Length: 157
Length: 394
Ligand SMILES: [Zn+2]
Image (tube, rainbow over all chains, first blue to last red; front, side):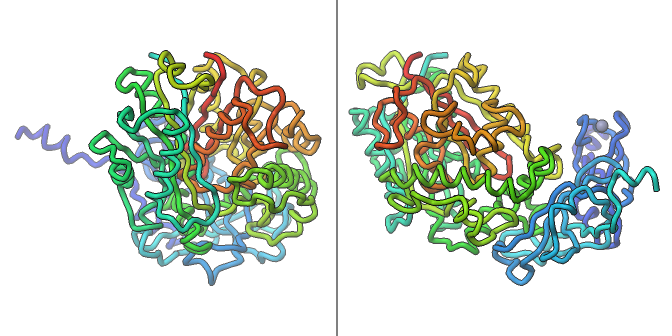
């Protein structure tokens, strides 16, 4: 086999693997990818840019800061999460652009609609040990509310 | 491409079934074949929606066994899996194969037995249609996804959560009212005179959604016989034609701009309208995917029946009821009729055909008999969307 063909067959298409992303979360880092074409950030990692499909990506670290865009309090959990309930899944729009899904570190009984729009910061990660069907353990980011700061206030800080 | 007609329909009782999935699908299929007045020998292929048979009965590749059970083997028999939209994509594919001229007559439908899993494990298996790597460890559930959508709806349109809960409750009240009139519904003769307060005061599942904002877990099957339109009148005086279909794919929740405006649903609905050469104002009746009350509002807006943020008020005003602008889920929908996920798309088509034949249960039938109807089926958290537009004429 020619050298070039061998190289094509063995080319690595994944710039940042999901396992590396999860390892980053465990170390308090929110890792992503910067697109050479549109300059935007992809997070969680994908093999192409989530905005333009660009193929030239480079690893970067996000600030872990952003805005809480929505959440819920789970009262009836899925099997494997009985001991966690009630708990709060949330979506966060990061300062760098992409949204990430995670857990919100907040008193479930006090979580009301007013939290939406608040500034949040990643303050750790949560690892679910997994079950027979989950392909092992997986990790998600955990966010905390930065009290009394709404996103519109970020600029005036 | 040829036009395609539906000439036979079948539907089991939804709820808790003691029969196996194979038996349930066979019953719906035989009913559809008898309704069409055709012979089993005429069926050239079988298209079956089934979402979680491996977890329910330890059965994968069920369609081959369904074909065998109906003595149809060795015809091609294929499973379609798009979570709760499984049967709709099975029907869409079946229509494509007939339109392409490969087959003249086929059977399509779906089946599910979710109740025997129990709430805890059923919630786990349904959550498998979430993005496993990112949404899995979070412990997201389906009610959770739509609860997050409800909070975004509240924020987008500046409707307080309390007000929105009232408006959402009207969806449950309406759909239970019609489900209670439907003899094949899981809640037949039950919850027919639900009040808004009952919905709001029932147990919280995922804040702000309560148990009565949610559809139930269900067992059941539904099936239809499709044939080339030019042959349809040989078998029936009232064929219903598939005028257009659409399908769309979503992705992880975190890659969506706004949970209340899923691009997968907007694009799928537009594809179906374009294919049919129709627009929302042409449609007389909808069977849409009300897995949760908020889901009905989102669907109505994404499909173009109401402007963004207006479906909540419109529902409260009765515009989606009989006699309203667009009667929606007159079968009871998923909330009142039940939601055996792999069968739901076929059930939606079944009830639209019933409407167009003037055979819907008393209190659910639209008068005059509708000319055009449309289904909307959603699988996963906006992962697989499918729309089917039906008409009495071509
Ligand atoms: Zn890009």
